[in-house]
Image 1 (tube, rainbow, N blue to C red):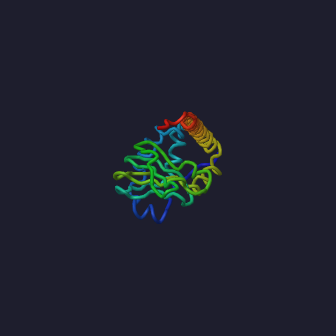
Image 2 (image 1 turned 90 degrees about the vertical axis):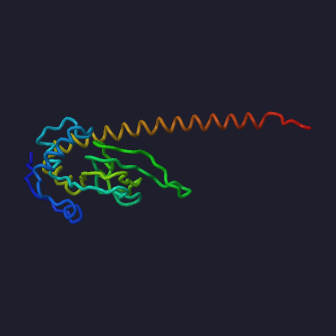
Image 3 (image 1 turned 30 degrees about the horizontal axis):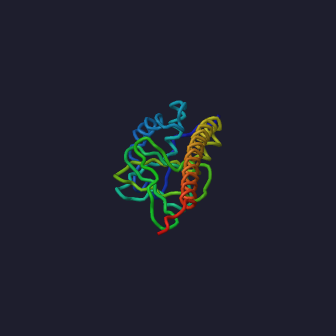
Length: 196
């Protein structure tokens, strides 16, 4: 099993904004939040610290965009403190809100697995402290501690399966409603019209 050394990770955008002055306190804060996040369920404090060490923290201002629909995925985000909205543009060009997320929730988790384009835009509704985990650091962690990585990837797979089940149920409901409306329309069309 590999060991993650306490290394400062530098990311031009995130570090210049955040400033890593008290890394130990930031690490403790992140570990406290990760303990409550589903995909980190069952990890030891040491394992959580390893994830905290590869994370980047940033505060987004109200109405600031965090990820943009269509851009390449690079990783996932956890909301430490704040509220964000997940939106998507539909065919007619309008933007719909899919979901609102708050403290302790995460988004962009599929971005840890692939770099396919983002399927939605995420914007801070109010000032929000967000931590990000990015694929390059995750791959380094996987190489150094495959057992830890397999635990997280297994739980992530369960989360994704749960979301897929929910989406399938919603699709079935929509299909049922579509069929019901089609049948109702067909019955209405078959009724004789009043002739004066």
